[in-house]
Length: 439
Image (tube, rainbow, N blue to C red; front, side, top):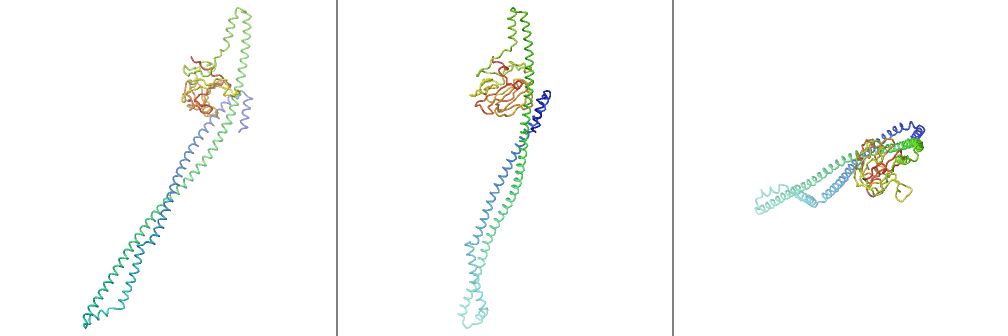
């Protein structure tokens, strides 16, 4: 890829006629690559949002599972406690002990009754010799019979109470087991959901990785295309400079010849006129705006060609000049301002000084959010350190259209200000020579 780009750049350098067409083709490829990068960034942002949502759901599911685990553990402890309580219940033990004792007494009475049989009672009825003994014996049998009945009633009551206690215990255990089963079902369902979300998260991570690699590839393509475009633009600028220099040399030679001819014909009489004409031939140099001077975007826009707009353009924003063209940047005398800095309120609208097409609208290191307008014939205007961009690459704008808002993006400045520059065939040009002076 890089070798092909180098070959393309060499062709452009060796074949000037091809350079202009290839510049448009390369610019088209660069615009397409930028569009791909924009779409990939948007897709990555959407994937990141989906990933965050799945992670949030997974966190919620695992949190619920943790709570269910805690509830299941508490139920298991309650079951163990209830089982231990049932085994060691005081009332149950007392009832079981009473039942055993009553069974023992009933057994003794049953054996005694069995051993005495019914003959002794019949003998008493038939024996009339001792009525007093009969009455006492009969009373004894009645007491004994009542004691047996009372013992049986107590035994039945004990069995009834014991059955009630055991029924309550069984009911409590059944209720706890039902709750545990329900919690187990919920836990199983949440575990299924968690596994599904883990699979979805893994897929999103893989998609994000693939698209991130694709984005890096597109960004590398953009960098390569930018290098080629820069080479082409430099070639076109050099060719334009050479053509302009040749034209200027021819024009100067013609003017010089005409001047000599006029001098020979008019001599001293026409010298003042010749001087005035010479002065008019030289383009008057506009005063450089001193730092602190006010500039204004007000006034009528210029509708002609950009190269004829010198001194007729409005400024892009109302404000005060902080730095002028050609001044040293900070304490380093080696670096000069290739544009101007205009202090203005944050959020103020920045307007196009002339009609053209947006060829760049993005963040650039050192310039922050930057807009570049192409005005044709090699003329560009640059607007940097914006707070926001109102236009996109490819948009056609008219003079006076709002293209951005003033800010301090890109770093290097503490207060909101606009970086404004004009390039002519790739060379910096003083904006003060193009924009109207403050009236």
